[in-house]
Length: 359
Image (cartoon, rainbow, N blue to C red; front, side, top):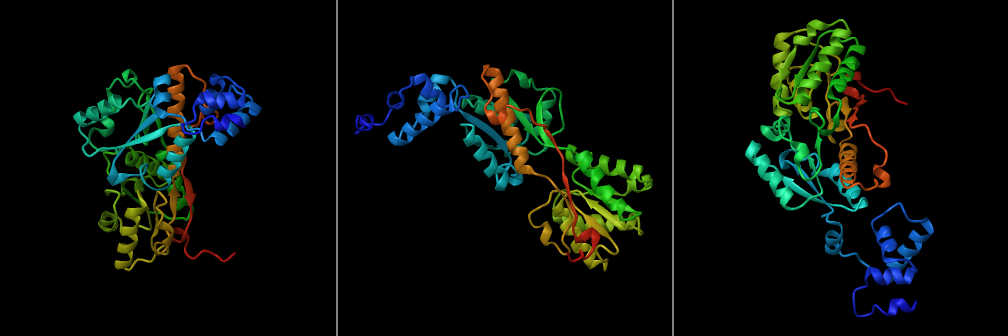
């Protein structure tokens, strides 16, 4: 094609693409911006010309034209980086890239109200189009949402794994239901004294799991077991001491639902030290489906939470809100509203059922 030779020695432009494809610059722009208002035949022709010319859109020009940065801020905490590490981060980056956005990852090191405001002002200064707030529930990292005028922010905000507050968009897991499902599993094994080792009780996630555990015990005719609760801190070193405390409270303890797989690791170690057989003397189950939990001794029954899916739903919801503010059509993958309250999946392993039968 002669148009290809006309761009030698210079960077191909959108006008070059439009000329080669026989369309207007506006139509070529729609293809680049993944607009649905283009026929598939035209889209294919424009994309072929882009490939032939080696055209690369200028991010700066795109921002100046649209008044948008095409950047999303993600606020998390490195010590609890469930959205900034591993599969969740990879999935979120791919989803953002598919939708035409880059991610600006910011780390919270302090959790005071002033630190929150500094972070928000930094993101506003960087002109991000939207924010995913994924910090852990520590200090004011979530409490600021109780009275802050979120709707006055110049960009939409979606909060991850926090309790629902008014009209603030929140994506997370149904931890109350998870507590019920886990406890029902232990009840189904005819365990009669089911204790719980919770996470920090100033966290809504821990509170909801305790409420679900107690609700299932009441349904199963064991409300008295609802007093067998010891607080941990999510980490393995607190699991063992918590188990010893539960055994002091109830020598007949025959099952324990642990608020995290990491604490459950400590429970399994301590049970072995105490001469307790798992699951014969003590059924143990956790929640989170930590990558190593299938390799604990014995392998741990747990509640799987699909964190990558949570991250992707949050990102798609944020892009929906951006489009709504700007009066733009939704990208195809964001067009159908998704349930922001995700459910856990019960994964049964040997720590509650013993040696699994051969198939």
